[in-house]
Image (cartoon, rainbow, N blue to C red; front, side):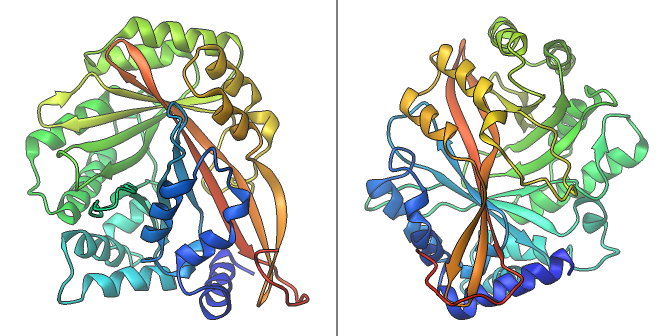
Length: 383
């Protein structure tokens, strides 16, 4: 059975027999989330946003952005939209309604422009995009537009400086600007190209993203850095205006403990250039997008990194302890339509440099729900 067939079966079962919304799916999984990480009014705010989304979203990888530096148990939501799926059709139709706003139309546009195999954007990105929802649980808070993220999975944009890479950057940039309702800015695009030129052939652009509800900027993630000096030399080549010494000393201590396998750098790129804020992500294993074991995770892979963050005093200790217990092997869920398999893990942990210190630590955790391929006794999903 192909992965596309597996997704279709999972979507069908989730929609027809398990839940009426993605929020209901999350409610069924509530017992697996520590109240120290997401709880109280913040959990209710998350469910409120998720109830607007179809239950089929749970058939694809989804997860949460957890601020480990805050005691407040809150999270933002990240979901996948894969072309050709029922979930994708939901977003396409939402963008075509008479009352569709720019966000809905933009997501619909991004999905549709990757439907044809020969479409330039699909040749680079493939069929998948990510949406990130900022969750504000304040009683009168209005929902903000989700961020859109595209990852060059089919034709990686590696740092070899080939002409094709610059063409691909232009295709992705134009698509995101249009979806966000922005006029393309040649100066902004040149700034993106300038960051790309600072890469070496062992590194690459991991993803492009925009947050239409925030100040205009392109969120660029550059990945594949394995050593501290690789990151430091890259930052120097970009002309980044920030505290190099803080990055150098912190990464040095992590590297000495072998706390990571590779790193990624996150910039907000504007027409005016790069600001001093820097995101630095740590991964504890190589993740290849098409590797069948991409979503397999184990607690031992994150122990040293979590210990280093604790020793640096960068995060709430109790939340770090919950992170150490988050990952799980394949777990069976008993649903109304048969069994499902749940996978949980950590994708990466990001430190955000603000001024002269790493003031934010965010864990990006994932869940993956797959339908069980055999007939089983019918029970309830929440058991």
